[in-house]
Length: 434
Ligand SMILES: Nc1ncnc2c1ncn2[C@@H]1O[C@H](COP(=O)(O)OP(=O)(O)OP(=O)(O)O)[C@@H](O)[C@H]1O
Ligand SMILES: O=c1[nH]cnc2c1ncn2[C@@H]1O[C@H](CO)[C@@H](O)[C@H]1O
Image (tube, rainbow, N blue to C red; front, top):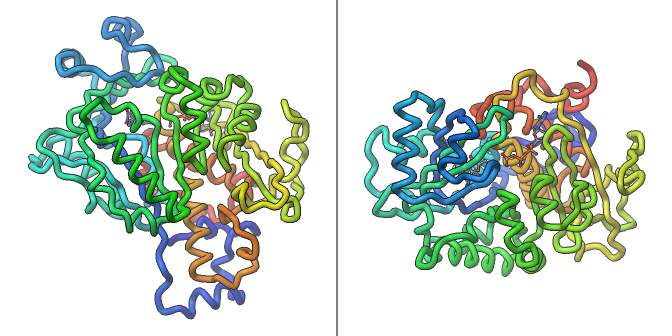
């Protein structure tokens, strides 16, 4: 496990110091590993820049992720290919991207549940998927299927907005028997996307996801849900509210999905509303940056030294130096919020923002998993006197998530090909001293 804390900041674990906590860690012959697991619809992204007219012609609402049939997929692919419009074909999938990025950041294992074609030709989509996935993502639990994996036409409009058309292939054929109970129950978190809940009658994906949730809840493993697209949520916000209340520990969404879920346009108010149903929220808001929100026990709250921010909740960041806790672990839970503007104002050139939100979530998962790692290996640490959900404070998680989102934008791919620069060993320095 590479700690988020190779950064020098005082909120991160100072791996370079010979402090007593570290001594406990280094004297152990082999530190016990921690990992996250996720379920996804195995998909390759086929990226192309398109005009609004093409979206209209294929009946694809801008910004949505729409399922298309084989005939439409064939026509769309032929049109994009014959006009030389395809810029990239790369492994995708919201959770595939997230666990891949987690493994790149943590330099450590994650586990992906999903399907994979049992016969793979060199150059096929299945082949590309495997080639474009970090070797630290454990793919040994994938279910072999007799058919192709899915294709996600990622259609980028002039304004950078992405519209997805999904040709599902066999991506939803995952069955509950292929969810390994031990793997789920020993993980630091189970990560899911709302897309898993829209599998058709007869496809096993939704029941596989529900089985994994059941295993995770039995073992108190946090369930992390990312909402995918506002169109899915606005079909039935009440259903999603109930789903989150019953099953979800940490919710990740963007401001549109937050509005669809809660009716609140303001991302801060949407985050606050979602805290009624779960323990922690990560809300990304494009050029506005991102928010984290959650709970801390009144006795463990820590006041920020940053300026207090105005907003729909005045001075909402007052306790942003607190570490997130499960609401149930608090005697007197108080709500805590933090916000950050885009790192360095965002990269100079943003071709599209596809996957930036997934990147932010992978940073949060890294912090959470680092906490589990630290708790298992340094149980005596004062850090674990109170049950914390994450290693770092709300404020620090904001910075890290934001930095990773920037890197996704700067690398022009939802999947990081390299981690953050090693030289940048302090978030503080990289943020403020340039
Ligand atoms: N135009 C932009 N300028 C600067 N930073 C941006 C911009 N768009 C996104 N970001 C950064 O990326 C983060 C996530 O972006 P965004 O809210 O667009 O994610 P998203 O809609 O969930 O994306 P996806 O669903 O494709 O993963 C933001 O919090 C911000 O840090
Ligand atoms: O229906 C879907 N299931 C799983 N992933 C999807 C779906 N639609 C789009 N994406 C994925 O979302 C990522 C960016 O966040 C893209 O890489 C795309 O593959």
